[in-house]
Image (cartoon, rainbow, N blue to C red; front, side, top):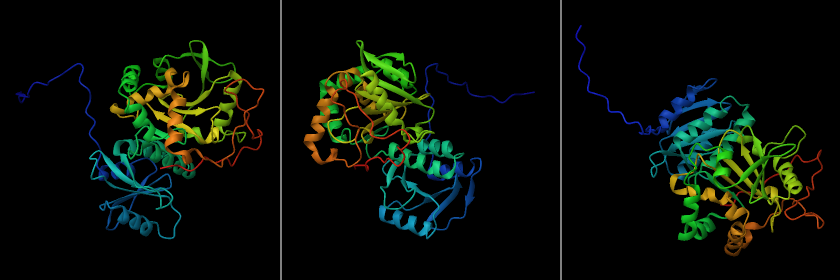
Length: 361
């Protein structure tokens, strides 16, 4: 039997796989094929639609902001079904524009298509309310209008990071050198130890990160990043418990970390202004672009164990003094407590209903 000639295969031991980005139509086909999902009818200007986890995901051919908002309202009508409207991003071939999930007044975000597919797949088996909350949080985190993989909630400003960190050649070079060994697949432990911390397990929960013997960060692990904003079974917010442990250990910072991933949410235990629980820096080692990876150094000893972080905060307050104002309840400091300590004003049985401060854009 004659075998047709085939050209030899080229093989390279160190070659990296090429990830081809999804189109919007491919994304909708992917969503419709998820377990429990189903396709929905769609009429122009809509091109396709699917229902997953009680959320309608719909694609449109129009890309103007005004038209997308009008299309969202028309499709939603008087119903209450959460709706995510997507369209191709004309400025980023690997991304799409996203509007939703609960109303049409929010920002039109630019999201990497493959990253959104991963999020939708992850929430596809969740109850609707939980899926909506996590999807909304992930859209905020992945928005490429800022820095993908880095989100700030009143702790610093993007202007400060670009101007005072990226714009400082010497400091940026040090940050680049410090983070060069941290890959996209690094978990929380690899991130912190690569930055120079020594980790020790705490007696009751989590870990303590030390720099030159000094306590710097208390780390609480969560099985899923969605738990960063979820009350525990006793109705306590995770950041309140974290900051109480910072007081116990005399650590000036606390981190909620994804136990099997590289996402970390940093809180300052005793901020100069505002509420400790409402101010954070959220960084994801797997979502940061290559040119933004030196921002991981913000978690390192140069910033958190020394005065680097405080200097950046001073710059942020000077450039935008109103950005640090907050009406949320604060974690009060006890005059007799050690440095970096906090006292939670919420009793253990009455901490539900706490809300984060509104997102600044």
